Length: 117
Image (cartoon, rainbow, N blue to C red; front, side, top):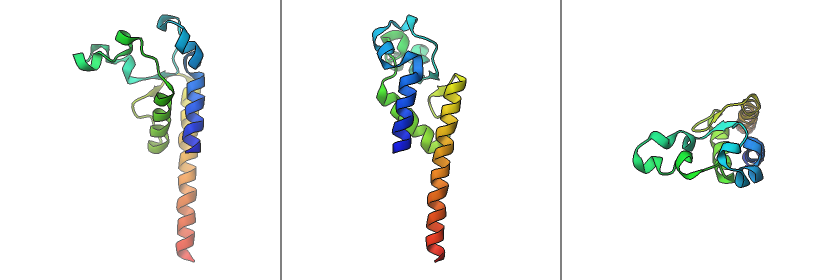
């Protein structure tokens, strides 16, 4: 959980100038995105899906979006619905996935060593 929350906070702080800038600036003034969320591409989907798109509502990602994204990246060891766009986003996602993999390997190795005793 620490890995997921720590990376969610980092993603939340880095993407598009940080949470304060995203909240108080119009969408067209935001810096380049580090991540591509599905809501940024749903404007031409069926009506009920398009109604929640960023183009129609001015949606920007909130902390819960970054927590979900961090959790899915950590569990799958790869991006799921949110794709990295910048080199720093790709590096951070790779570091998170690698850290999750190492932790999993250590837990499995510990379990196997307990069984072997």
